[in-house]
Length: 214
Image (cartoon, rainbow, N blue to C red; front, side, top):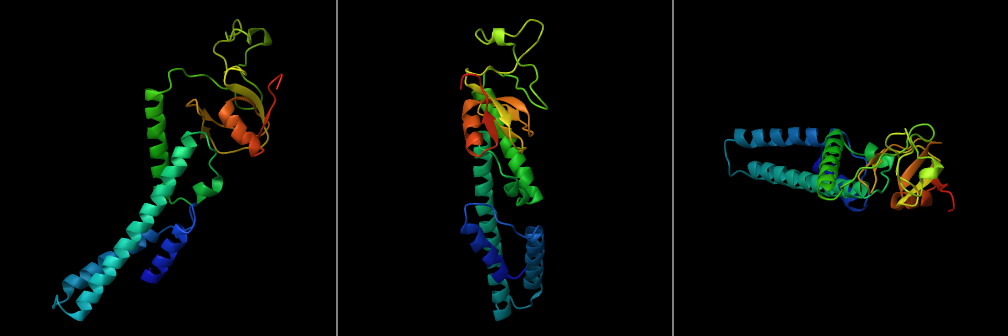
């Protein structure tokens, strides 16, 4: 890849707060070019010739530009990971623009933060209702106590206790709620969601609050 093309890609990446689409093999091809330039430098009989100087300067410029591109994209991915942990839905377009290695980094970082958050903050895990229709939701007579209905086993979080009952209007990518749980929302599901997450999704017309009395 030409240095000028690489700089154009970096400039485009810097101009927006979102990930941009870049060639899937950009890091591999540029690394190969750097190796070839290094070989040319070592093969040059005169280490002080103008040609050697030009090759060294070009290799240095390519390396710095590539490092800046990686750093810029990594910062955006870390921001997406942090927002995802806080319950902000991750748009599919952002995932599509990640290179395979970047997606692996996103998944690893998100998983590590979630695990650490669970260890440091989350002290109680609630079960949620997912899939088609409401599953394991307490009967109306148990909503005041928060206890499971007789014979029902563990239940989903109750509306009014920091959660709301909602109908899913559109399928979306799995996300982590503020309670540390991973939510998989499919269109027409009836689910219980943390109120903070539900408010954000409601603003985006992804869920509809159907909590009785609201």
